[in-house]
Structures are given as structure tokens and as C-alpha cells.
Length: 130
Image (cartoon, rainbow, N blue to C red; front, side, top):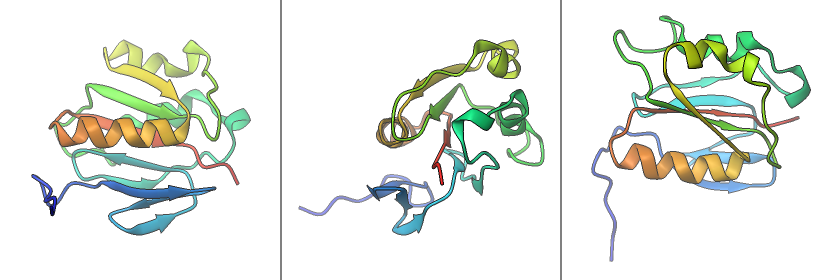
């Protein structure tokens, strides 16, 4: 049986391996941000220890998101293992009442596919440590 995407323009995470993920068949081995609005850009953070509030504020910039589009949920993929971010770093999201879920990057990839496929306004910030 062939499966067809309901939304052909949707970014879907199609496969993954050690240190990389593929989005619509194209491999990426760096941290990135993708959203159900069609956004796919590199993310400037390369190590969990370097995360700052600026990295999360950057997710909501007008230059990044389409006008008038805000996620209802941000999925933070913390790398190969689950690590939680200090709440102070997430304040820009909390202030806007945007939910944040933290999980390892591969779990965030799977969750993103499900939520984006349901038509939810979701943004994934995926840390790929180098």
C-alpha cells in the first residue's frame, strides 16, 4: 500500500541515523529548526552547554516565522539523550503561552511528524551536537 501525504508541502522527517536526520529525504547533520508552517533553517546552537535564552528567543523572531504565525507548541530535541533546559531560558516562550516539550532529538522528530501531520502549529528546535 502506498501512503500519500495530506499536505505535500509539509516538511517531514523521513529517516535518521547517528548524528543526522533526513527531512523530505535530504540529510542534515547540524542543529536546525523546522515548523509546520514550512520553516526549515539552521539553528545556531551546537552544544547543549551553550544554550542561552537567545537561542529560544530567536525561534519567535518575525524574520524567522511567517507573519502572524506562532507555534502552539515548541518541541526541543536535546540531543542524543534527554536533558532539561533551565526554565529561565524558556521565558520568552512561557511569556507568550507557548507550550514547550523537551525530549531527546529522535523522540522530538517522531513527535513533530505526528503533530505536523495532524495540522497542529508546531515548531521543532533540534539539537545535533557536533
